[in-house]
Image 1 (cartoon, rainbow, N blue to C red):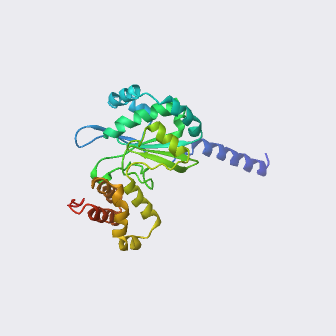
Image 2: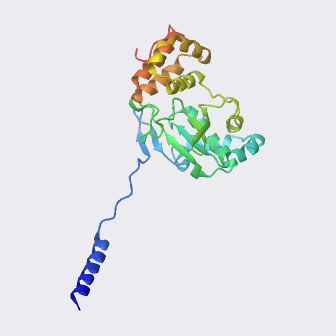
Image 3: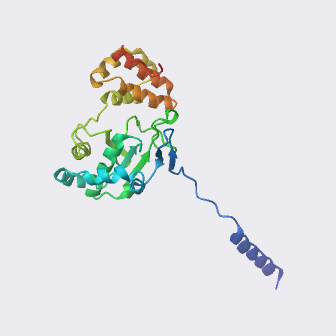
Length: 263
């Protein structure tokens, strides 16, 4: 064997041996869903979970019942089916939340009726603890303006078409038909929704200078001080205290006798 061929054979053996023994890179980790026991001693899901977990104990006690008991408005859902065919859905909920326990099973029954593949539905559980209020461990809620749950968001190629907040205005089927049809659909909690829009479009200095005017715009949209207090609580837990303070100042202008979140 000549020297050149000998060197080649040694290199080949080394390459094969190293490839067989070299450690494989682990896939990039993602934040898994968590199941905890809250301060009241009750089980709670956090983060991304599949619907199948809700069909198992202890959550099945409300999921299966509310799914079975709900009758889909088939006439409206038949019209809705084609509109949802190429859309994706994000569902934010709390297993601790009575509204979520009622509405989420109903939503899934409608999606099932419309033939929506489970791969196009993302289910995210958020916390009710003060320090992580309306947040998930992976922070899927970040940038989504989740201040009430459940929150059903319909997306078209990643862009939000509309959402149903906490409960439908008419019915789940009719609300979904309206927001997927480009109608002028406004979910519950218009006051907080307007403030979210203002925060997104206006600079803080201008907002602070125009607080009385903004409060006057929001006033007809809110029926109790709890709406903006709840939104302020979410903002503070998310590390946005300045926005939280603005929300509370507006709330105090609308409901001067109400107590602020910090009191």
